[in-house]
Image (cartoon, rainbow, N blue to C red; front, side, top):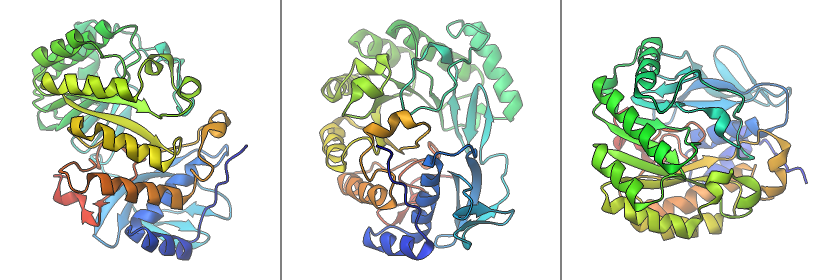
Length: 358
């Protein structure tokens, strides 16, 4: 059954934002983000916007839909009303090549053979891509990273974090080898920050020991993604793990000096299950998980979505429920790490800029 997508007007957004104690501007951002799930040949648009309440900016994806959502050089509109003020992009806001992207002082590297991935149903990747280099050859990695630095004019010495976001390797050893080689190259380029990877491949005590021994500030973000219907939704390499496995592996990571967390896509499981999993993994979670808002890139994912998953109310209720899990901890969302997050500039009505240097 095709999910219902109800795009609200600004008055309705204001009412729901108050119900869930969410800043109005962030509720508008969330609603615009949800427009990307409407099945249309119109491409998604990336924009930088100004948030009036706390005088900050944010970056989001949205989709122009005739009669519903539109944009000009100055504003994004919902049903003809000015929703958010647009600002021109600066180079530091978001830069991208096929090898990766940079946002602020965080870099994501797409540094592996994408075509090795069997793809999850919710993904928009073009898995026909295949870089003409050996992703486990340190000389090839060095050449690609230096090209990436030149193209985006990045100073690696000023980066806070590098995250490897393609982890579809043939086996654990090649995953670990690649991560260690990227670390060596990045250090030679002046990098002193944290090196992370999104992965389900690194599970053994030996693999974790090698990372702890060879990388100065490592972190692993487990690609859990969802709890229900995993055999039908996630790729084969992710299917090998469940929440109980991850709990034990995260504990082993902690003992090897590796920062540990996980990814969970909001919209595929009930809010209760998402919260219960977050509570279970909390003792082993060293940095805030990636809770992604589902983006419906194709109709294959439809049977597995929660019935109201594409509604603003579902997302704000998920946000509020997860804030109750983490607000007594020091863990907070890193607003530079992801664009389609449940949080933009506030967490539990506290500006995230007070936690992070932007």
